[in-house]
Length: 122
Image (cartoon, helix red, strand yellow):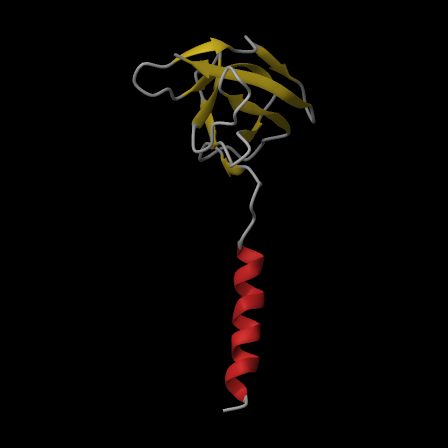
């Protein structure tokens, strides 16, 4: 009976390590071994409220290669990409449209282009 509290403590410790609240979920294109730059930012509503669970794609304007991430609870996203020029696309729901976007984003090797803002409204 004494082993149950110890086993429970270990289980809770391991489960706690799997919870990463507030961290962006990263998804990169398959088959690409070189991803030295990062595009990061926030997706929000016009009043500044964060939009979580939104798919954001970085699309290479030359190759049309797609890289994506899903926004976290704070609306944040982070996408690792190779050097190049990218346009960002965010999924919108019925009746919504993108009212502000950063335009084409240029990424060099080891660049971190953070604090990009995408605003989605009706």
